[in-house]
Length: 557
Image (cartoon, rainbow, N blue to C red; front, side, top):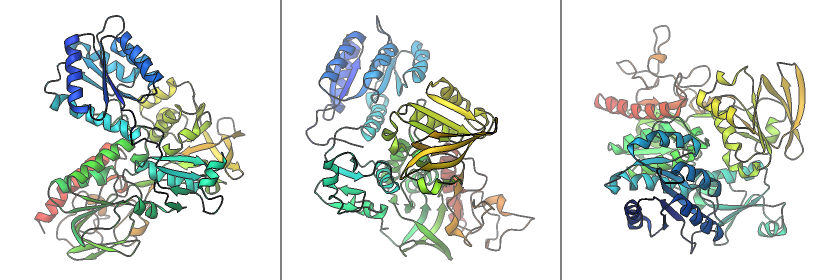
């Protein structure tokens, strides 16, 4: 993502209300809190506000937030927002309503993707206004794109190595400018005219990294990858929703807490373009926003978070547990929580390995969103994650085709998402259709399909394919350490007992707690756990529950 940091004009917050007293109060409150970072403007009618937006457009300014009254003569707040969104689609939208207008506000959530609605009056603003606007403005700043003269990434637009670097920077909210090596002499010159292996990452001071690994990038960006102490009361492996929730509760309750993640915090959920059924966010929020907020929260309570740092061993040294990292480092812990989540399954057809990262992507890969502009995008899979990706890429691609093996869209997808897909004109759904082969030269160019309904094959042009075909747990490194099921998911609690027998590794004189593994004091939560509910909310809930069980374990040992 690209940003300007120095001497850029302030982004605009625009307040719109036809009541002069309310407008003065809104502008006063906004100026008192945000004038150092944003330009605060006001308009006494929707028509005047449209003229203000026109002036903002002409001057090339950015609009961060629209705070709009619903009841205005001539044009309602929702009608104004419908006009404004076409000009500033990334601006956050807040509707000011009276109690009688709540139905209009709820309708606006779907019509204009309303971010929030506020009931009048909002006094005291420190409790009822600023916390809401702080979150929205933080989200806007995290996602905002401007011209940026900082980090540059030069590489092939469609290559696995370049995709990995861009994805790492994007998910770490590091602003950068991408330059395609094939689109001009400037990029070739910056990349050293072939002297360096691609992709080349150039930092503002001129330093270069050639085809860097994640750990090398993390070190250059100042991300912590080394634990500050040899022993912790709890070590959490995996920083997805379950791990981050556990970190928040553990650290807030006084436990010395270390979180490790092999990639970037957020897990599989962190790659989601939009999570719409998470409680408390009626307009939805992206997986990246959820991860960013959770990371900020866990750090605020004092937990350590290290990434990209990968665990590859776990052993008992009673009463402690020893976690071994891939670099040979060993970390001691009283309690270990396994929350590594899952990875999307690889699609097993000819050409899949060849084009992975070069047109074929696992998960949403929102890093590639801009590259999909005016393209035909294929989505493989029929669960919620596939539906969310289809909706996301429909904003960029000319056409999005969903390939689903089942005979109905409803079979694996929430109804609200089915309805949104069917309302979106550039999304096509092909049922009972599967991929036979990926074809192309240096990058993916074509896809061969089979229609089970008609028993016919077809071949189509395809530059981008995103797959969502189930997931597998990241537990290979736990062979022999804890009990797992036949698919690699970690067994916990009552699932450990088979034919009335508990595994030999269980040494306590009690039954295992609900989220406890076959080793006393080692717990599992979230998608990595056998028979867990694969939802963000359930992962967060299990992370919180695990900490409650940790306290119970510690009180009895």
